[in-house]
Image 1 (cartoon, rainbow, N blue to C red):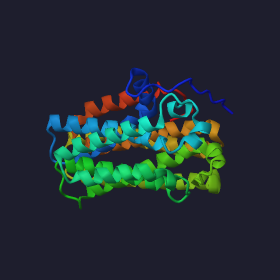
Image 2: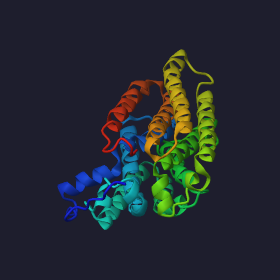
Image 3: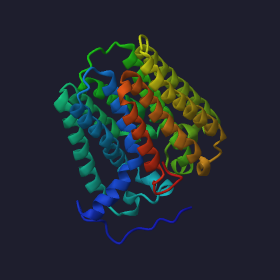
Image 4: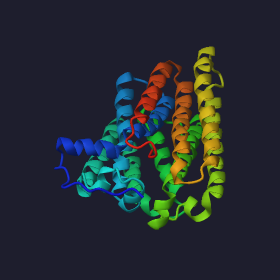
Length: 327
């Protein structure tokens, strides 16, 4: 077991040391998850004004970090065992300070999105409430993955509405929402694999803790299949009357997503304990990003270079995470 080393005193609020520690808490390599979710929603909507797309994408990109820091404030018990490097666990920053910055950051992101479409403001408030109550559901095997995932699906819907989307009955939107819901649920579930020992010790009755890895593998397979089906539905609707260019730019992203999904599920079935779980967690994040990028590029083929650059930036950032075993 890793020995927990506490710092002499926490960083003063809003000083440079505080921001450095807060940045680690945000998990920069996972900002791309909310980023691609929002971008996929924006891509399905009619408004593609560069300035609007840029501001909205930035808000969605940062939202994950603020949300992750917020949920960390309620999971210090299990994090102290499974992720002792994190600043909140080490005492580098104060829980109260992190709560303030996280809530203000989420509010700022919500207001920026709401400035483009006021109808998203109640949805933004709903996601914050969901994040603040997530820990209660994580302690129950039936709640964690899907409870966390509906929050992410709402983010995609917010992107769609903020960019002028109005057709809530479109097959493309339905498929994209299913992709976000089940794709992220799979990420959450596979992420639990690396924390089984800590979760068991601290009373988190997650699916792997209660039913073991074999059952969890099967649920993961179901989530992956449903995410793939959702992406297939969205892409089929978007490419129904597609040009050759749309097909040419969509197929490479779709193929990469399919490979990432297969690698994820193969590695998931090979996980035997906490120590090797990260080998499955890494590809599940790749799969989620590539599924979202596939939907976005099918809707907006001219965005292909930017989406490829976005994915490359994720790959580079992921390699810089503080601990290879933690994602």
